[in-house]
Image 1 (cartoon, rainbow over the protein chains, first blue to last red):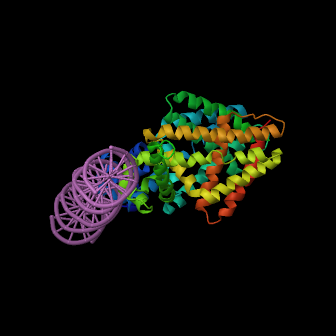
Image 2 (tube, helix red, strand yellow):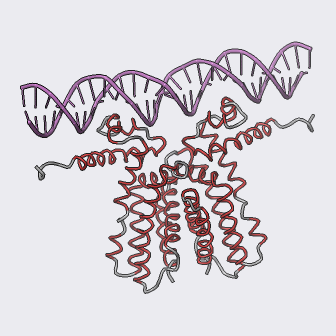
Image 3 (cartoon, rainbow over the protein chains, first blue to last red):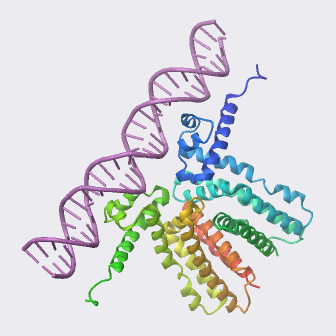
Length: 203
Length: 203
DNA sequence: CGGCGTTCTGGACGATTGTCAAGATTTTTC
DNA sequence: GAAAAATCTTGACAATCGTCCAGAACGCCG
């Protein structure tokens, strides 16, 4: 029956997503290098052979996982963009959201930075990393341009630079958040720096 | 004799430095995770047992290596700082030096970013990473404050933020330089962005 | 020269890795 | 309901890893 029959491709992908969701927990905990396929499988409801049934090798799994996670990531700030009525409101909401995701999803973010660093050594990771990086760049660009628009001004730095800047301070905050024994201070610094820097990017 | 007799501690450290110098080549080529102690030893004039004679374990070796390399790194821009007579000259020289080090030492830089990412997972790396990060921060700060001074203005962003910004765009440039098939474009973008952004950091 | 501490070698160890394959189990199809 | 295809389990594989160690080679001093 066409109604009950599930497209095998979809079913296959549903399983891959379930696997990815489990794997992301272990990957976020151990990082790319130290997370073995066995450890990933053990910390999940699946057997280690099943991982290989759905993914050709470790790289394919990891790339799929990060792609899967970042998929939900790139719309994170679209809510605050469309909800904010003024430039200041947008800025505060944006900064708050940045801090929120550091607190809630620090393991995922460090995994992303890990993978991006690995892509500088591992050729086969580059395509996925480049693609994700581009979507993150336009995500940031939507925030910055909307901020400028609400303030009746124009952005004075190129899209590429805007992302580089905010990614830099975000990464710094993540590092400090995970490393220091005063995580709150890292968040405060990030909040304050975003409020200082974003206005600099518009005329 | 006190004059001819070499301090054993010094001799020991001379050897460690020689080992580090060799190891850095392999580490820069393969990255932290994929560079095994055997591979490091093979690509050097030393045996793999000797690595363990001078370093307790892999982590100690890697930390020593990156510390050793960054030691020579943190004074990279001091020359342009003291030589430049005007703000514009400093800016150009700084941007040029950034591009130069990407071309000449890309493997070392990606190793640093690799190690910094690993420190978000591996507790025992954090102290060294944090310390290096601080010295890089003040290195950048010397450049930015001198630039402001030469222009008769003051820096309007905190030291921490200035480093975050420039590290962000530098990392982006390194990624693009290593990843794209048009490395020159990445350098051009970096140059242009530095010339756009640094002026934004001063009043 | 002989003894001794330092330096260095190269093999061996157990553990872990990614990968694979043969068979059990389940689901689908006719 | 049987045949066929898919899904999944389990155990095994060769390779590689970090680490350790027994002993060779070295330099130094009495």
